[in-house]
Length: 595
Image 1 (spheres, one colour):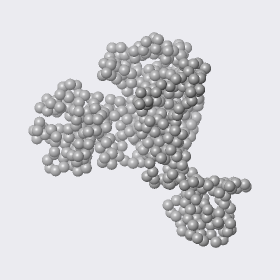
Image 2: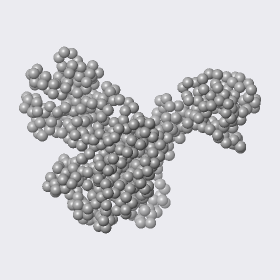
Image 3: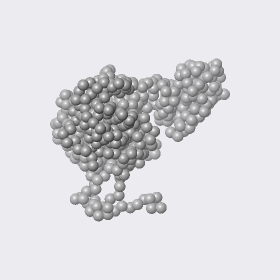
């Protein structure tokens, strides 16, 4: 039978035991136990760190024998007096002090755990996720969750100080198109109808501006039924905000104030504001990405003019067909980027839409060039000079339409930087991406489709082109990027009823579709709406980048895996037939599930 606390009350956390000659009571899990015969040492762990409990020949024999029964992960409380250790451990903050125990309670015994609770673990992630409550005992994951807490705390502090009101919006709402599939909730009362979990609080926060709340903030839970990646989970948290009587500059400035406050409070790092800005077009031209990592250079170089009339059809045809020929140059990389490594990169680019990749690898005095037979030495030298390729460098080249060339070279740039290990650690490069195209051309449908939700305001000078020249329309939309990760998307919203109707028509929505999906918002605009805009900052992604974590799973308490299941609780799971009957739902198995 386990001991009880019975009069013992914790007075200090394990990681805070730093002074000698203090009477203390601690509680925690056993990290390690060492029985040396006449001495027993127990490392006790809680969320703040580890402290050593000591039992010696002065310890009451019954207490000493109880200590001898302790095993890893037992839950203990211990009372005693702090002393300076004879053998100081400089690896931990409490390594100078130990507790000479005079009262020990074994509050819970533990079976041998499926894996050792240590940070330096090679245990399969699936096993750790199955026993997530044990995995979360590891100090790194506990510190990650504490970091999330600190970010949330700083967000509330900052926005409260700036007159924002925290308001909860519904978790059960109308299904509206926002770019991903909704998670649907069947209604028992309204049989055959469904609620949706919010992909974001977009419509509700706009309605709060119509309602006159002026400045709204919420740590909002969002849900999207989409394929997962390292930086995605089906449910996530946004630091969501909306402001009235503002334009783009006001929102960017308010957000920059938050970023500056957050990093000073949480990491004690100064972030220089205003943050760097790039237009979408410039970001794509220079980095091949609308969320570029600017911690390293290796910008894209365009040498289309030099090769538009050359004898090499791959280059000349790309320019003739409205595309371009561009390169990234990896400095001092020729010995690392061997022909074998270049072949791997070529396979990668074929997998993401390119037909192939040319290269120049300059190891010795004369460069090795995959297309040299089509150019004279002087012509080749002109190309190398134009793109800044010198001895010791490697140039990787794509020739195609810009919608292929730019993003493919963006991916190559990142892959090469990781291979060369040239991305600085502990550096935070923030970047605003502004002036996004309003529409993008879809080859399948041979038409322009919206890049943003339908309430995004076009730039004032672009409104005239909505019907006649969609490619000339740019949006009052902006993304915040940190170290190549998109943290936030936002925009100024349309509040003019007539313009909103025009936008719906430009997006190809019928009157019936508008009414069915957005009728209540459109109706609200008829009663007057202040100019407003806002954004949502991904709290999970922000924590991931600030911690240098590899995945959102590292900063989420109970994450889902690639197929959107949770291994610990084994959800999603079947529901009994009676529950489905009440909802009027019949489950039809897919063919592959029944074979």
